[in-house]
Length: 451
Ligand code: HEM
Image (cartoon, rainbow, N blue to C red; front, side):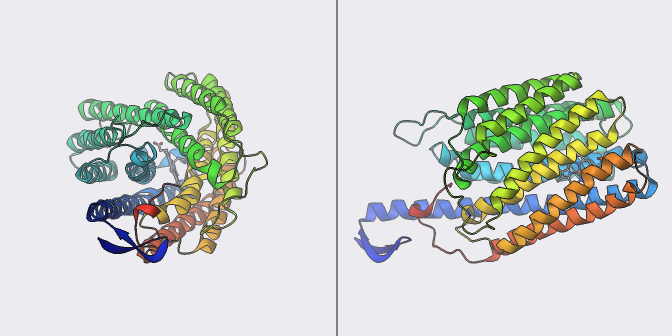
């Protein structure tokens, strides 16, 4: 029998050897999982900063100086988009999925080497993709290779978190949010398969590593509305109801929202854009009604260790979701509308997705990554204000400039880009400084939580 102080009490608790060794193993696993998650998050942050945002800012400054949206290489635009969607947000989702899904579903633990292997293949795949878009050296080999690596990494992830191996006891029945996350995972799989098919097609028949415009637009509907949006809804339903003290989830509405959204993605992929946009708008409104963001809360929000304004920014992010869907309806009703499509895309990716990552990420990641506390809640507020301001300027100026409604709006676009760049840089600083801090509590099975 050995004395051990637990995280909840300083008084030694007497444990027999078997219990002690089980606890030691659980603590060691939790520490390994936290290290793994930190590696995924830091990798995602690196993709977000340089290949993603910096390249996006560079592209926008060039477009604005030439006052022509089509004046830069489509391969560079796609390099930026892929780095943001898959290099940043995708890497975060894989890492958080490895850390949280087996715990939330009470599954048997997966082998850690699988998660490290997935990280290696995914990172190399996304990096090669970016490089072969930017500098087309041996791209006919590297482009399909990058797509294969991404797909294999995904399969490893899927096998680890989607298995049916309950850790013992009665398996938990599947709650609706799990169906939404599964739909999002299928959206990711579809995006990766389309990506692989298109990369092989380009390698065999094309003269440049860029997807043709028409296919790219359809592919983006799948990878944004078909993958990221249900992922955001799924994790919002699981976590935000608790964090924001919202009224109980309307489960049936959530499933209806998922159905409408899926119908919208399918319609968009087969180029029925007006019908698609109508479904996506209806799906978004239904998801908001399901999670009850804009109804009075039933409990106080849990904002400990983050800035208390957290619920306000979540509501703003969901406001951007409606704006993005409404803009895509407007764009689909016009003949040629690159500015409105671009504005809709960034309302979705910056207004909703980046804002959700900034809010929820800073709420959950410090504790998942070894029971740490966010370095600066005030910096969190500043970056969220900058992100919202940059996004508002970007979305409005993109419509005015690209659609030829107002010439002065070309001068606003680079300013919006620099404001957004500052916001994402502050997010990176806050997260890295948080990881550099010592944990507030020693890891213990009693403190291992996904809430
Ligand atoms: C500083 C912030 C950002 C800037 C300055 C920026 C800039 C750009 C520019 C100039 C384009 C070309 C099309 C257009 O003019 O609309 C573009 C496209 C795109 N961006 Fe961004 N962006 C930013 C943030 C983001 C974020 C956070 C995401 C995703 C999480 C994202 C995803 C995309 C996607 C998917 C495309 C379309 C790529 C394609 O056509 O294949 N962007 N961005």
